Length: 90
Ligand code: HEC
Ligand code: HEC
Ligand code: HEC
Image (cartoon, rainbow, N blue to C red; front, side, top):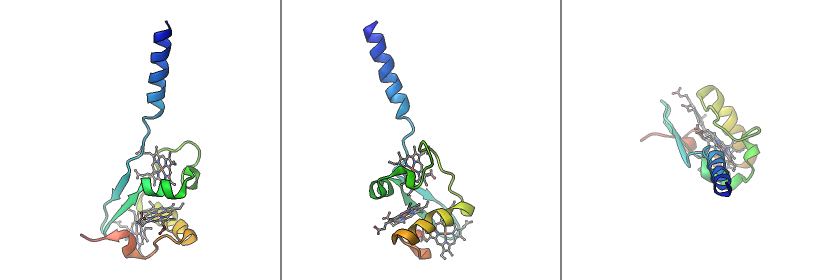
């Protein structure tokens, strides 16, 4: 019985940690691909709540949303704001 309880705790633990973000996400687009380094942002900013409301989960980054989201913070915190800082043509 004790073993079963431990197993279930382990499973619950694994379950909670399934929602792990990719370290780096690349958004392909016509202006040039944009690379978002989630891990570096996470380490740099420390607080998940800088970007995530409530429990961190998928954020839908699309062209309507992206500039407000990415650039507003960059303006505030001296991140890159020039087009080519983010959009890279191969
Ligand atoms: C600079 C903003 C930013 C910070 C800070 C940040 N995230 Fe995220 N996070 C994002 C964005 C943007 C996405 C969506 C990436 C994508 O397009 O797949 C995301 C996605 C995620 C996802 C979903 C992954 C998936 O594909 O299902 C998880 C989980 C997550 N973040 C956890 C965290 C945790 C935990 C922290 C704090 C330690 C954190 N994030 C800090 C911006 C951020
Ligand atoms: C902080 C990073 C960042 C900066 C700076 C930035 N962009 Fe973007 N841009 C993005 C992201 C992220 C997307 C959305 C990518 C996606 O969802 O496909 C995007 C989308 C776009 C799109 C839509 C492309 C398509 O295929 O529909 C255009 C056009 C664009 N940006 C032009 C610009 C121009 C012009 C500038 C400079 C004035 C600029 N961007 C600066 C990150 C940035
Ligand atoms: C809550 C604040 C915040 C948000 C939101 C944010 N960034 Fe950043 N970003 C930063 C800061 C701060 C830096 C680093 C400034 C420095 O140390 O040079 C940075 C740096 C970068 C860099 C330079 C390379 C690197 O990783 O160091 C890129 C590219 C970048 N961000 C892309 C994005 C994109 C694309 C998005 C939106 C999907 C985004 N960022 C959203 C704060 C943010």
